[in-house]
Image (cartoon, rainbow, N blue to C red):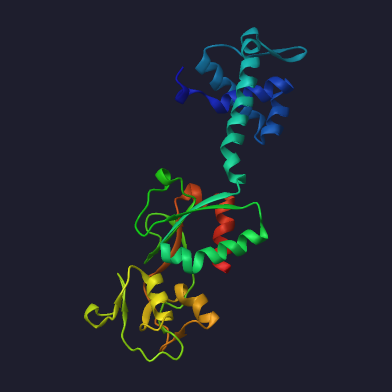
Length: 264
């Protein structure tokens, strides 16, 4: 019989009924009706082409055919339990692999992970720099943080922010914009061009001009007084999203991380 055709529900009912030698007590264990147990046993007998139980004056008895398979059946269920435990072992792992843009990792993510790790010293993080789409399975990822309009094809939750801000060094008189890929500053007006928003923040902190960047990236530098906001924050349809395929998203360790980062 092919594995895909194994009557697993019927075999589970057989195991319970054989242990109790009672359809009623088997039904209580399985939270079904005695009639449902009887139906499963009859369907299993039809599938296997053997009789499994006989009713006698003393009650329910196993046939020799049923007894012949019980030891292997119960050993098989034990193997199933071991397999499930092995698959769930990763749920209790304290290691998390996270992909995020380099500048977000440096300016926002790492300080938050350090704070989370102080609360649980057993945690271990593997950080991967990724600005574009990344294959979760190939990279063995638990969670990714992406810049975009939504979670895309995955499950996701947005990181709260005030959109985008323009920042400069406190007291700086430099009025020229600092350009980076994806920024809204015109390239011909830029004094400095850098590779990402994180470097734009560094250039602004050195007094080389003002940088328009996601507020989330500039939050810590603003709070520390290294940068000041020029004008008002502006809403943005884009934002940072924590995303993962549904199986990873359901993991307890990923849920806990998403919750902690969402509150950070």
